[in-house]
Image: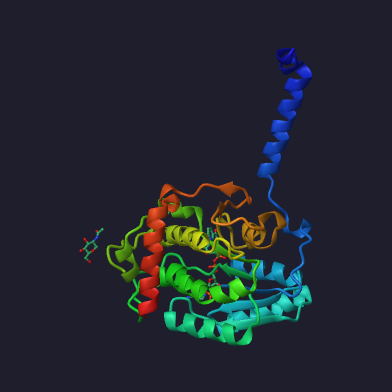
Length: 298
Ligand SMILES: NC(=O)c1ccc[n+]([C@@H]2O[C@H](COP(=O)([O-])OP(=O)(O)OC[C@H]3O[C@@H](n4cnc5c(N)ncnc54)[C@H](OP(=O)(O)O)[C@@H]3O)[C@@H](O)[C@H]2O)c1
Ligand SMILES: *[C@@H]1O[C@H](CO)[C@@H](O)[C@H](O)[C@H]1NC(C)=O
Ligand SMILES: *[C@@H]1O[C@H](CO)[C@@H](O)[C@H](O)[C@H]1NC(C)=O
């Protein structure tokens, strides 16, 4: 009787149709414009918000009515984006704050300003990054790519944690990249040692550390109401950064993301498995402690 049902052509056909529908749904991207979540009364920070993916993330948050803080390194480029976002969204509660993520001192100063001025922080998007930098050691003695892409954002996130916790439920989204899969972990890289400045090799390492430390942060934040996830934004041509913003916006605002933490999302907003090194919990503890040491000493 049971087998009769299983072999029935209608069962076979309906299963096949369902499989196709599920497949299509998974393939299709989540649509920010179809998501009605409002952010009125919520404060958000987006780093590197003056251009590319970051600008579209900030634009989306502004449309939802958030108090938006654009964390940029350039006063002029930041002001241009500020004006554009205000004009396009009609939200006047958009502000520019200057930070150079490659400098730990600048990150400290930025965080101090935020803690003095802001009563709450509900969303932090670590978006800013550089790629293809030649060898360059910052005044803190760090490799400039590592400082900008990982250690600066790491310190920033940690300095803002208490505010995020007070504002819970709140979310941290770190924009990584599928390039992390080719990354390696060697803590001497932080100081520019044992690094080969070939193509995007250093970038790939930094994007791996992004995910590793986000996962450890998520573990440490269990029970606080603050979530931390990483995303791959998709490979984005300069003309279509809007699409590249989708997975970050999804993690930051989607209702179904409430409570989900320590995960990695692909550009189509599907839950993905990061590289094996990014799933090594012992390595994550070590990496996080190493980053704490490096950023607190300076
Ligand atoms: N685009 C892609 O195909 C792709 C693929 C995978 C992952 N991603 C990731 O997506 C994120 C955004 O990428 P994107 O393509 O939009 O990059 P982008 O167009 O190059 O924009 C990067 C942003 O980061 C800012 N930034 C750079 N160094 C900084 C520093 N020291 N302090 C503060 N801000 C700094 C830049 O400011 P300035 O304008 O002043 O330089 C700019 O606002 C990055 O994390 C990137 O790794 C992108
Ligand atoms: C990194 O470089 C240092 C010298 O700067 C060296 O002692 C160490 O063995 C190197 N580590 C790796 C993993 O190559
Ligand atoms: C960096 O990652 C990308 C994407 O995985 C890969 O194509 C590239 O070869 C990597 N670069 C290096 C130098 O390993």
